[in-house]
Amino acid sequence: MSAHQPYGDLVDLNAQGLILETIGREVLETIVADYLQALGTSAAVYEKNGDYAAGIFTSGWCRFLDLRSRELCGTSDNRAALAAGRWHCHESCWHDASEASMSRGEAVDVACRGGIRLYALPIVARGEVVGSINFGYGTPPDDPAELAEVAQRYDVPVERLLGPKKAYRPRSDEVIENTKRHLATTARLIGALIERRFASEERDAQRRLALERDVLLKETHHRVKSNLQVISSLLHLQARKLADAAARGALLESQGRLRSIALVHERTSRADDVSTVEMGGYLASLVKGVGELFEAAARGIAIVVRCDDVSLDVDDAMHCGLVVNELVTNALKHAFPHGRAGTVEVALRGDERSLSLTVSDDGIGLPENLDFRKGGSLGLQLVRALTEQLGGTLKKASGPGTSFVVRFPDQRSSYRTRLVGPRP
Image (tube, rainbow, N blue to C red; front, side, top):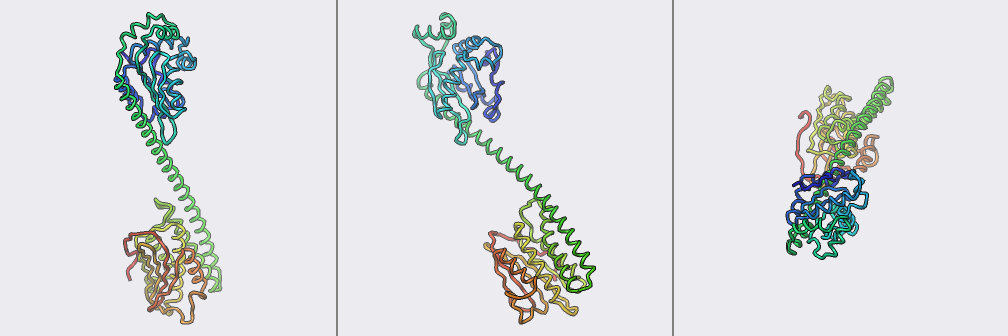
């Protein structure tokens, strides 16, 4: 005999679906069947709004009274019958037991309109009640007056109740108490599975948001890069028309600064991680462009980049790039006069607490009367300002040629040294 009644499965009306979709109909039916095997009565699982996630009757007593009260509703439509208020078994299971357990947030043990008892527990996920689970237990009434009251409520002769009552097999108090404890475990398990679903949906939503953000950021970086390239091209065209060498040089230097910023946006727009810039490739591209602008290779000047395996956020990468652009530009302009050959080296190193950015050359060195901390060209003034924005310090290392070291804080703990660019 099927555990479902002739009027159909009320789970088909489930519109909310949280418990039903999370656990699955087959699993829920297996869960309630476990209680039916222990108690032989009825069991149900409800969504928060009262929709059935599972509902099964097994005992002849429960099945007879449920079907009879369904007939009292006077409609073939199950949804209308549920709202009629005369489907006594549904009213007991939902309103008297499960809905009460959800509103109170605790176990409810109440008399059923069909003469036995109902035990219901709320299902809680993340501190919020999301449903309820219950089962029927106990023995149909022996007292003739109580039996007559049930017969009157369900509008049947008392004689019609005697057969199902006699067939009912009572369970011991020990079995009933063990089943109540088991129901509490089941309610917690269902709640935990729903919490896992919530967590999974949140992770999926976060991944979607991150993907949408990355696409938007990449598009933004691409457009900024394109705009900067247009400005850079305009500066280049303007510089070509200028007869004044100093003015022309100032425009070309500004073009180099724009290019260093545009490179950050270009590399970010192509990277998987739009929040950081891989510094080795970025610095290599940057100094290559500066070298071409000042014809370093034709002058016999090599530019070497040595960089640990470091990625910085966009702002820090941009600041570092501008520092490198200024110092390499200064070296190529001033360190190798009269056809002198040599090497410019850019190094980015890290330890557990900080990063050091060094730009050095083996040229003629700075003028003895130049105080790089106060005076100097616009380029050196920019280097000092950018160092402050990095939260770092700027020092000039001793030795032949010129060597500037910018040290700034970082939380990285492991690096991999590599050589980028041509060896000297």
